[in-house]
Amino acid sequence: MNEAGAPEAFDPARLDLADPYPLYRRYRETDPVHAVRGARDGPTTWYLFGHAEVARVLTDRGFGRVSSSTAQAPAVPEEYATLRRMVENWLVFLDPPRHTRLRARVAPPLGAPAVRALRPRVREIAEELVRPLARRPVVELVEGFAAPFPLLVVGGLLGVEAGRWPWFRAQALALQRAGGTRSDRSPAVLERADRAAAALDGYFRRELEARRTEDRERRGDRGDDLLSVLAAAKAEDPSLGTTALTATCVHLLTAGHETTTGLLGKAVLALLAHPETAEELRAEPGLLPGAVDEFLRYDPPVQMITRWAHRDTELAGRTVRRGDRVQLVLGSAHRDPARFPDPDTLDIHRDAGRHCAFGLGIHYCVGAALARAEAEIGLGLLLDRLPALRAGARPRVEVEYAPDWVFHGPSRLTLSC
Image 1 (cartoon, one colour):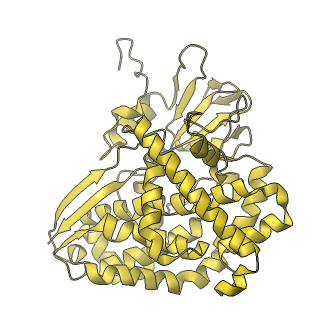
Image 2 (cartoon, helix red, strand yellow; image 1 turned 180 degrees about the horizontal axis):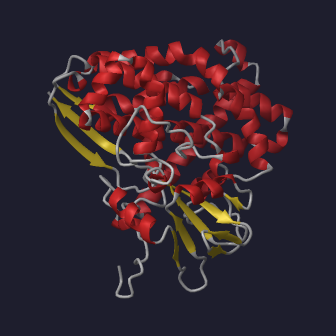
Image 3 (cartoon, helix red, strand yellow; image 1 turned 120 degrees about the vertical axis):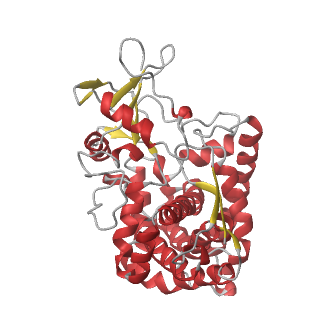
């Protein structure tokens, strides 16, 4: 607090990445709709810490993913043209009508019926990865399971070669490290991300073209992977554009594994801190679907998301002006006692519905059903097979967090029995 008793300007860089929740609580209790004035003539940034305000903005068409005063992708300097163009075309940064047209093509292969049919293959991938881990006294969970598992699942869904997942992982990490909320961002990091964007763009352009031509028959493709779906969509609707489609592939590949990697790592940390919960889930695997929602509420892998005000709006008595930037602090909203009683307690029996981990409204995560299936299956196998999670185990835990206060989770999680 400053001398006048008002909270200081919120600065995410001050967050304790291992436990940001005490700082969230201070702002939620003292200034839940918190303004940070922009430099010079820049827009005001509003941080929303309460659940009601966060949920309202997520479902209000008066807020969008693109600024009403500029269509530029956020935080991508002009000199990194390939990266900038790619991010501008990511589904998560589009508003209607482009968002509507593109999402309509992507959503069916990622919907609940399609994911139900995919679950046996998801389990096969998880078992292949867990099997060697179960024999090791020391396990690096991120590189050994939490990162490759969703990447292999999404890669298979897209129709890319399974043997190339280390290459895809390297490119995805290069893009991730260029995020505007990383404290280790530098020109060299942005340059590597720009090269990764070019490499991925080239790869997916070639794959889309192969599916468009008769080469598909020679390759033996069945034509039901997402790349084939997108190639057919372009043929039916040329306005979608190849750049938008390749960006969509990259977005599904990167965001589709990055968030699930964080969810799995943080859920394991929660289970290690609550061995009674781990034991209960081992005894009653049917509790896993509800437990996944509680893990998402308790410590979400995405801590903040951005919206832009498209009109003047009152939020909790404060006036957010058109053109202002709004940061929705999901990690704080999920610990709001007005919505979740005793919010700092992990309780897999609570009704964790209406959490915002997948967003709400038109930008509700298109891959939510797949992420839930991956988490349920992955955590179930880890609880059953991983020595560090067995009853009575007291593993030594070493954890490092990526220097990112948006995509939040362990970059390294080593368990030694």
